Image 1 (spheres, rainbow, N blue to C red):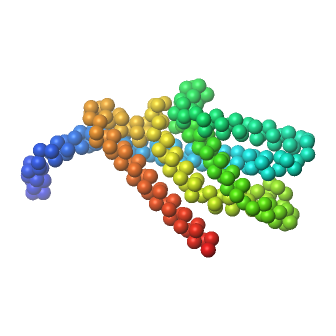
Image 2: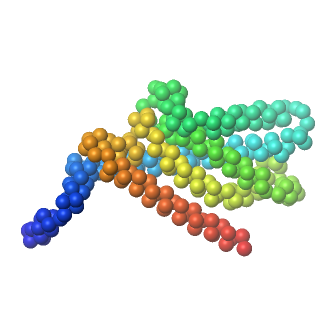
Image 3: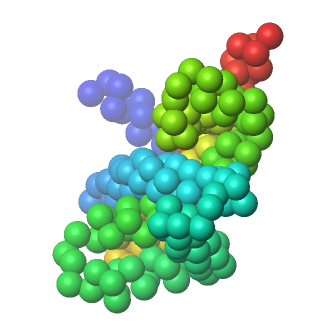
Length: 255
């Protein structure tokens, strides 16, 4: 009781602007537990980002292998079934990269949700697929650049060990390329976190949508939207620091 009385006395002595700030904070986050909109939205954002980046890496590796294999071997291959299949796959990948990289992610999300998976009730899964396919296009070019940067002597070394082309890629080339582009992949993860902020366009209660719901309930825009911006900023700073640490360790391991 004594502590409560002291707290009430302190609150009464606050300047008017501080009292208004406290009341606004209470209205936006404490009243009716509205902070849960941000907490649940953050969890949804991280869930979508995590699974989308895993899907993007998987698609990116496949697309990068097809593109780099075509660039490295197409001129040396004889006309036949193998070269025909590789040419078709390369054309499909090029169309995929062109379309995905040439259209806005929010449009891709809306097409995926309202057209391709119009009957789906799992909006989070649809968002994972949309953002995963979008990320895969950028990851493909990142990994392809890593593969193309590997000296051709590494391919010859794999052949001398008795590996075929696929085994050489899996056991020798991909691990080296992945190490070279790991910081760039980490940055793609950071970019993807911010891109998921458009999930609200299809009714997903992500972090940005959570802040907007609070704004619509309290009719005050400043505090909920600033809170959303600060949360994104903290997340980006945190993962940026991790990327910096990763880059330093990679540089140290090469010495």
